[in-house]
Length: 471
Image (cartoon, rainbow, N blue to C red):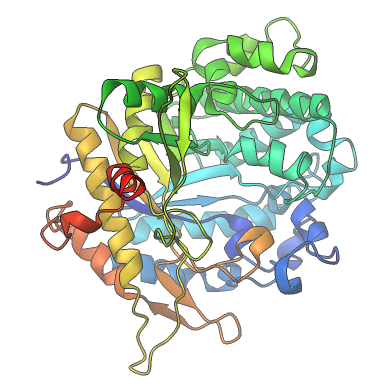
């Protein structure tokens, strides 16, 4: 079975993870530049200062993306390249780089999908209060307007902010990502609100600047899948995916309900209580700007069932259950249940804006990079996605994460997610087996996907967990 005729096949990256050249072209400093200089913050002391050197090698890289056959490429723009001080004076050298990048993509017949903020916040604005400062929404709108004015004649697909949950909680509460702060929860919730305001003002800025823009979002997806197809277990999984039961949460509803419904979810307001952010009149009018598609980043999930008390009960995986190199469960059913639950709640066309796995990849003696686990992972996930579409979920595209091995944030270069292998010393690129396999999937519009090679007794899903748990 093929995918819909206009289904979009792509891959994704972010600026800080691949560009390098952090002091080139008058680029300003970001909070990630600072965190990389903090002892012990990044594994092995790695930094993003060179990364994949995409800033200098973008033409070579786009040629590889074209060889894979990508129809679309999701990338982010580095805010400090456009505004070295975060606001004020525009750096035209930075804009020129993205001019060339977009033109090169279009010449390769690859549609650009642009994320405006993928975590590389200008350090100069952090010194002015960063996301705690309500003015950040206007700073972001100014940056958005500048970029869209410059690229909007060629770029039509926009996502303002990638995974705001991670920015707020991991960057400002748990401290594992830049800027590496550990603030009080009420401060983090105010950051949360300002991120939503920035999203809303960016949507307004895009609409005001470009008449043919297509605007979406790209939050992270925390998905619970039912241990069986029994309606009680399905309802438990839905409840567990959306319910807010603890104060330290990255629940989708806390981010998406304000955008789609113009209000925070009631259970979130009850659980967070005094830590809920201060809202000014009309804030929700700004936040709840209409969007055209709903992107979601899904990698893994957890299995649940209806417990004896009627509440969702987490089911741990059995010993030896498959994991990726970063220790995330191989649970492809997340690409069925996640989109299905989100579609039923928000009724907005969807794209999988990130999905992928970290693998232990190296160059074999034959000079190639063999990654059968990644091929298997993608195939299982795409089959689950296809099932969701068959059941009526409106899914418009799939972006594999990542196009290239790259700087994986606090993990440094220890994790390899790419379709393209990168030697960080020589900067040599090699298409992995998964890249050639993905090429065939794209060319056939999914027709080459098959379950014939998948033994039913080793399907990695919640039903399998249930069988192993009960044996």
